[in-house]
Amino acid sequence: MAADFLAACRGQPVERTPVWFMRQAGRCLPEYRALRRRHPMLEIVRTADLAAEVTLQPVRRLGVDAAVLYSDIVVPLAGIGIGLRLEAGTGPVIDEPFRSATDLRRLRRLEPDEDVPFVGEAIRLLVKELDVPLIGFCGGPFTLASYLVEGGPSKSFTRVKELMLGDPATWAALAGALADLAVTSLRAQVEAGAAAVQVFDSWAGALTPGDYRRYVLPAARRIFTALGDLGVPRVHFGVGTGELLGLMASAGPDVVGVDWRVPLDEARRRVGPAVAVQGNLDPARCLAPWPVVAEGADEVLARNGGRPGHVFNLGWGVQPRTDPGVLARLVDHVHEVSPPLNRAFAAGEAPHG
Image 1 (spheres, rainbow, N blue to C red):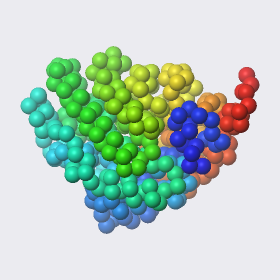
Image 2 (cartoon, rainbow, N blue to C red):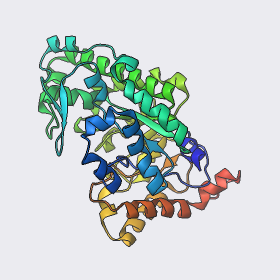
Image 3 (cartoon, helix red, strand yellow):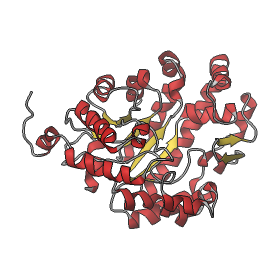
């Protein structure tokens, strides 16, 4: 049911719990791997028909309730002239990392039709083919800043924290510029046909609640406020953000994504009743025997308790060694065992207990 995903994002009752998977486009699919043997990742991203094909592959194979655009969060940065490359097994690597306020001059306004025209082209191709909603996405302020300042992926985030804590004025300007970049990118994706958007502030979990509140939350609010008039569901996600869930909800999204570390009922308590939740099966569980996968999915659904406003997902992206057949079976399983309480809401019945 194509409408279930959008309804769940808005906290409305659904007939069955909708399912999609972060990083479902690519990684574990053999048809994607065959394509990657012929084309580098950025070439696929920058070729609209190839990006559309990769986006469609998991919808065809897995039966998910939403598609997610095949792209990368650093694509807008490359579009405005930041030198970078995507290294296999590593991720984004910045040619000249940001080190001081003078580096802010290298950031300019994104012009989507000129800088990243292939994104809109791919979305327009997809909306003609899809019978499920398409999710557009961008990187969150802290995560994009971490790549720019660290020069690539990091485990400690010491350089970006050093800038953030030691030069708050430069940090505020950087975070604000990246928030504006995100807004421009997401608005263009929605105008091209994306039915929902997700902000991946993937590494924000490296921050204390106090530092997140002071240094990142204003930029996050800037993004979600600027998208409010579009009328599409807005999702906010980060890894290891259990202690930040309430703050992330206060930024103004419709949905907060939850990783696998926080039980979903506790996550709902932290974000409050006005915000839907997305998640949160441990991706590693999908590498285990099927009974273990099903048990984990059942626990996620049980902790949600049949309440409206739940999109089933993994707590982070699909692992490359995952069997696509397990993911397809998981989609069917979640659809089949969706709690009756949610169905009661959908039928207009009063819940009990």
